[in-house]
Length: 168
Ligand code: SF4
Ligand code: SF4
Image (cartoon, rainbow, N blue to C red; front, side, top):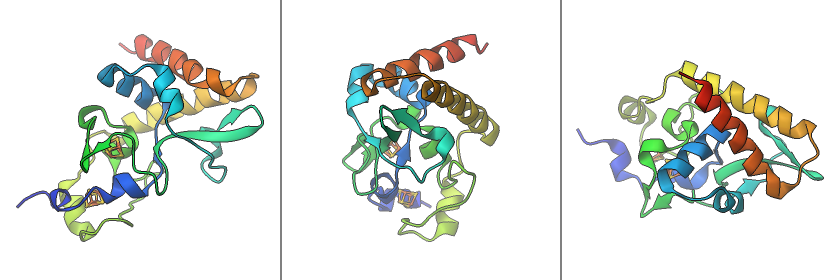
């Protein structure tokens, strides 16, 4: 039987807020060759009601970093296909499990039992939890220092790179 997602026009990539951690951004940069300045100019969505530990303080406002935001499709969605499939953010690779570990097929046009059968997450839960915790620590560090919006991505990436390099 064909993967039911192949009959869908990637509604999940168009409908959700696609949260990217510092590690996700780093992998996507390494894979696409885009500079961190380019990532800095992509989505940064104001989302105060989200997990406060993932919210970045930017001057007088608070933001999370996203690749897509509500009605804005993900920046890596091309012809309804993911252009960075092999290094998509954890949030995508774990879907239909949310970052909080809940099941969510709200925007799926396909019955959820079928989607779950074909979309077993390809990242183990403990790896995602570990990375999320490391990301939240980086966010806390950023929030403690006076920082300009333009410096934020550079700061996140420098910290993520150091952690990535220290993992054997
Ligand atoms: S997970 Fe759901 S919304 Fe996403 S491509 Fe598959 S069927 Fe479509
Ligand atoms: S990174 Fe890929 S899988 Fe994730 S939302 Fe964007 S297009 Fe979809």
